[in-house]
Length: 401
Image: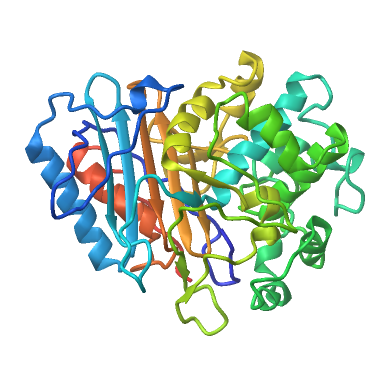
């Protein structure tokens, strides 16, 4: 999720309409099947009659990409009611010890945090406490052009506010990964720069937007954003393995994989597992696991926690400038799929849902190092889609670093 000045502004979900395969692990993959979620009957492993041949093809394709792109460990989950599930972990969680990757691990989910933050904001809309077309200046002082930038503009990534993660001074400060940032501190780095366009004129990925929405939630609710998200989003969604670490105590629960990134001043790959994510806050600090993200995908896409009218607002998407990809209130739409991807130093994720087939795809990785100008999570998802839907492979170019 962290963006150096030359790093791509955003990563779009690589999407898939799939025929699914059984969960039985092959010996070469050393995969582990995820357990059942009592709140989600479709989480349970099933064959669905897909056959061993397709399973083997998916196993091989994922493993080929993992080795080619030097991805340490990969977790992939695909679910389609009535047609079977495919759940795999391959590779290593720790390059030093060789500990294998596991489907039960916690993982940093980077920008998937935005789906939780925007859901919390929309809960306040349903409560009648805010309106999407309110100006941000009504809640947060000092925002450049804040009288014209609305909460909707912020959630849609159409505010024109400069992304603080692209400021060179901010990037240099991140050379100290233990540093704790406050929301106001990171926003100040964005405010140093002129707004890039008039509100609503176009799409530009900027974490500045979601940090501001976190402040709105705190202002209106009178609570810390992490507490509000826990009580109003995570608890009713039964997401027992998802959390928003606090800035002062950024706990990363065990078990988890080690994360590896080259988003360093030297460009060398380092272990970023315990880097403090406070700089990302309501834009990207959260942690989850495969089981919870499987459940969350459908909740986000169908609006289970929101009123139908508010969900319709969320799903109104606008062009992003990338063919076939549009963006709504904190979520992408592409190829019929709805959801979000995430990236933060050392980790990447994809969580999407296809309403027409009630299908879900989740990908978790312990690296964000690109390969050939592509994000590793996109490479894995592309490999899967080429097999399960060869006539409907979603792909988009990623701007080079």
